[in-house]
Amino acid sequence: MIIQCSAHSTLTAFLFPSHSISSSNNNNVSPNSSSSSSSSTTRRSLSLSLISTTFYSLVFSPPPPSSASTSSLTSTKFAVSDFLELPNSGGVKALDLLDGSGEVPSNGDQVVIHYYGRLAAKQGWRFDSTYEHKDENGEPNPFVFILGSGKVIPGIEAAVRSMKVGGIRRVIIPPSQGYQNTSQEPIPPNFFDRQRLFTTIFNPTRLANGEGSTLGTLIFDIELVSLRHQ
Image (tube, rainbow, N blue to C red; front, side):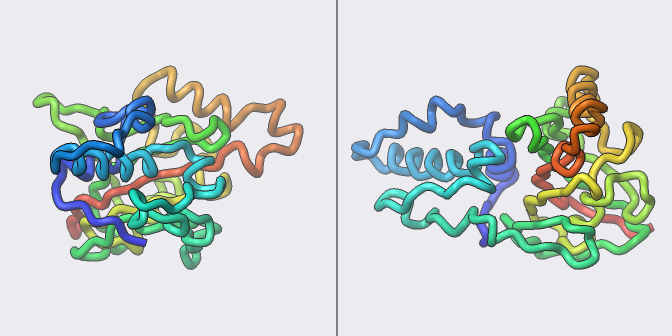
C-alpha cells in the first residue's frame, strides 16, 4: 500500500499530523460543503484522520468502514496483514507508506532520516519526533547515523537497510530489536520523555510479571531523507 505525497510540507503533515490537524477537527469535517476548497480540505482531513489515529486503532483494531467519501482509503490499507516481516530482521514488520526512488543504503553509509517514534505500551504515546528537533534556523533537524555501526537500535537499522531514499516506512519493532539499554540511539532529548520511555520499557515489576515481550514494542514512521557513501 502506497500513499503518494508531493511536497515536504505534505510529508510533515503525513508523518506528524498533530502539527496540522487535531483529533477534534477529525470529527468536524463537513460532508455538505459545496466549494472545491472545502471538498479538498475534507478529503485531506479524512486522509489525515486515518493516519493520525493511535497505534491500536491504526495497526490492531478493525479499520474504518468503507463509505462514499473514503472509498479511496478503504479497510485493507492499514490491516495487520499489510505489514510484512523484513528478512533477517528479528521480527521487524514494515508497511511502506511511500516508495522512494533513490539509492538503497549499505553498511558504512551515513544515512539521514526523519522519524516519529511511538510506544505501544502507552497506547501509541509519541516519545520522540525529529521534526521537533530544531536547528539554529528553526528548521527540523534530522537524525544521522552510520548504518551497521551498532549504535542505533537494530529495528531501525533493519528498516532503513531495505529502503530507498525518499521513501517513508512504518515499522513495528519487537522488544528484542528495540532498546536493550538506555544508551542506544535514538535517545529522546527531552528528559521527561526519555525517563518515561525507559521506565516503561525497563520497569522491573512488570518485567518480573512476564510483560517483557510487550513492554518495549515500538512503532516508528521513518523517512529516508538522504545517504552518503563513506
